Amino acid sequence: MGRFDRLRRPSGGLGRRSPFRSARERRWSGSGQLDDGARPSRSLLVALVLASLTLITLDYHGGDSSPVDSARQAVGEVFGPVEAGTATAIRPFTSVPDWFRSRSALNEDVARLQAENSRLRSAAATEDYDRNRLREYDGLTAAADNLGYALVPARVVAMGSAQSFSDTVTIDAGSAAGIHPDMTVLNNDGLVGRVLRVTRTTATVLLIVDTDSVVGGRVGESMEVGFLHGRGEIGGAGRLDLELVDGAEVPSSHDTVVTWGSQDGAPYVSGVPVGRVTSVYSSVRESTQRAVIDPYVDFGSLDLVGVVVPSGTHSDRAVIEADGSLR
Amino acid sequence: MSAVRGLVAALAVAVALVLQVTVFPHLAFEGIVPNLCLLVVVGAALTRGPQFAVVLGFLAGVALDLAPPADHVAGRWALALVVVGWLAGRMRQDVRPTASTVVATVAASSFVGTSIFAISGLVLRDPALSVPDLLRVILVAVLWDVLLTPFVLPLVMRMFHRLEPARTA
Image (cartoon, rainbow over all chains, first blue to last red; front, side, top):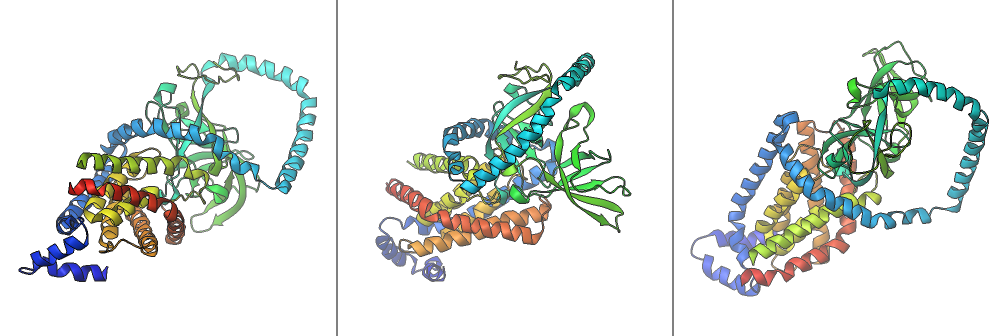
């Protein structure tokens, strides 16, 4: 850069400018126009930096009703289908790493699955009894019709990069599938996050591990309530912090944490498993207990998720009803 | 002809953006992916100078800020990539950049760009992360970008070189 500056500086001078420049133009074989561009580029730079700062200010102070949201919506309508299409196109290739998993890893899987199988078999032995009991309960719950939720299945098509320091994903179902902001997103392991905004064909989901995410949680064992904060890390190190409202209550390791739920199930419906307590810290100064939660969901390899919608929602795809039937 | 050039550049940014959010998360290290949009901007800067690169940087940044699944305060990547476009453009010398210059430029640009983004986040308190965490992410991001340079930069630079005669005509 130093050499470049030395070359350029005289060109900003008075009389020597034109011969110097013409010599350089010949050497650059037609790309000398850059020299002209170098001066105005500073005002352009300032203009664009100011434009960026304006954008930041608009979005930052706009809060929830930011004027940038409509631009986001418009860009999302364009990029959403493209992202969904690309994700579908590369799906056969993304399974390739699974082929190279080592034999020992597969052996471990077999052992784990055998253990799980025997446990399930013993559970299945009492299945008839359970089923009869369940049928009675079902009769009860059918009366409370509005309790039933339905799931709209969707796939994750894009993930925000960690450089952007926000953990968000795009799913390939949007307002046409009956999805609206502030709906709960889960998969078969547990709670994934909530819908932030939707376009016609896609929706942006805030993962619970994001630093902005706060979920009301309930410790399964003691029914104590608290708040789950994300740490902004995904992958193996992804953890949540649980702060219990009652400082006297100490959650124990391996306790399950489920969602506490909010009014009308927005943004989170109640009773969705979130994770397991791994360790507990007590803060004397704040007189609260802070537990570290290992989420059940592996956020590094999210794929199929379900969005909780009210039962009977009109959707452009099959909806999984509360009783497991497809509609 | 300038419209065609702008269109091709915008298309390159769009392709980079879509690959960055759909393909690379499968290869990501703790969620950190190579910043392809930044690589395109640096490639444009090295072949076409700062004037063109700041505009392209602004476009790419706004796209990164607005396209799903982005959720940070909009304008932060725009600011970062404008500065990157300008800095990388100033690196341009009177000879065609050598491979080592390109790699060094990418490393510096990636460091500066990701840092500006992270610092703007600290100022706005957008992500409540600690400085060591930020530094780790920035370093991994720089490594990723340098790793991808031999695959992406020649392609991008050749494309912008090919468009060059159109500009003088």
